[in-house]
Image 1 (cartoon, rainbow, N blue to C red):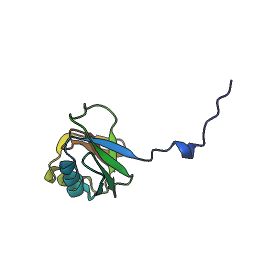
Image 2 (cartoon, one colour):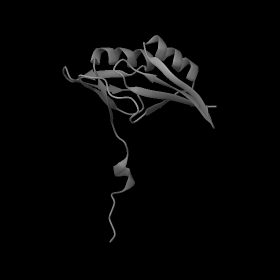
Image 3 (cartoon, rainbow, N blue to C red):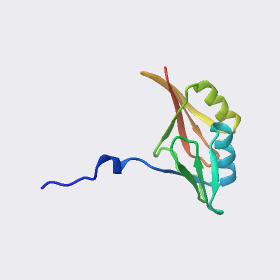
Image 4 (tube, rainbow, N blue to C red):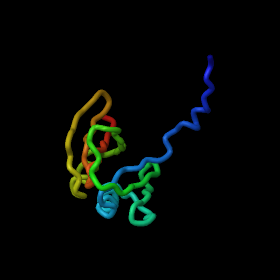
Length: 120
C-alpha cells in the first residue's frame, strides 16, 4: 500500500505562536531584545514581525512547562544578543558550545524557553 504525500513545500513551518501570560510584557521584552514589531488583535492576541518567521503571542493563564519545543534564533554576535536578552529582563538558563557553534538558552517574561546560537 502506497501513501501519497503533498509536496514538501506544503509542509514547511509557516508561523509560530508563543503562550503569553502578559502580552504587554512579551512585546516589551521581544521588542527591546530583538527589535520585533507587533500588531495587537484584541486583549488575547498579538502578532509579531521582523523575527525571521512570522508569529504571535496568545494569552494564557499559566506559564508553559519548560522542556517542550525549543525555538532557536540565530545571531551574528552571540555576546551582544545575550546582553540584549539580559537587559530586556530575560533569564539566561544555559550556555554551551557544540561542534561548529555555541548558544545560550533563556526564559522570557511568560516562562517560554528559547535559545540563540551562532557559528564559531
